[in-house]
Length: 362
Image (spheres, rainbow, N blue to C red):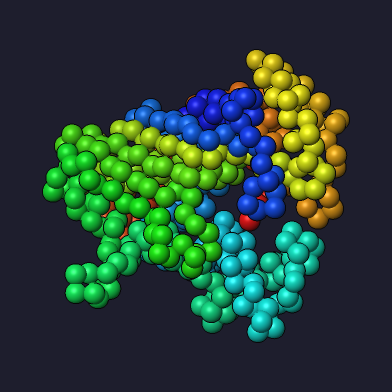
């Protein structure tokens, strides 16, 4: 898994098909469209070893998805910050109208960062505040467990897609219609973030089970390692509940990208893209990537004060210079998905390189 992830990352940075674009989050990206990887989960748990991953956060997020919850209170209470910035941005305009926070906060500015920190604290400490301002709209959990459609009589029908997926797998495991989607066109405008990992299909021969997931937008440094591990766990949960052996997780990518940093830092990559591609493309061994990293550090403009950490390119170059280590093992209690707790997920023999800190563009 680590090798596949690193090879994919290198391809994004060096392929002539890659594009430098403005992106949708005020931070430019280097992006490659269209790719696919697969992981045989019998060979080990696909958790990145070239940097330390926050496995507890991964588990809590998956449990949150499967519960149908769309409020960040559960995540914040369990010290999982993954969705806090999206919830803050989603609710900021309404909170400003009511005087909870100042209006016209420039994204990523010191005042924005200060308000974000206060927002997270209030969600943690004030249940009424969290109930009012901690929701993300009808994102993953609601689509997985409470998809809304119109029935034949014109009334709204609620569909538990996850429950039906498992039921279909148990009743007709060879079906080609065992599908779950988070992409609900009628509700996209009410979501804090349109689904990135948007479509799941399960395949089985009544003995082994594979799961395919398509992801439209892929934050290759921060998001994708989480997505791989999360869907590997999800694959195992589904297979166990339906009574099958877990085999493969297949991951299909739309736009897989690295954020380049804000301001002059981000623009530099666009202005020097061909030179950068050539420099990284010449790397064959770990020391070569270290040389490329030092070259970047000598030539890159400094990150703007208060906006450090949005350059993910230097972070992946650092990972490419690190030898991979053996995959860990993950065991999950064999019980219905709605009964699972964090303690039911056991990770063994995980020996990663140190963590590499970067910020998520929102």
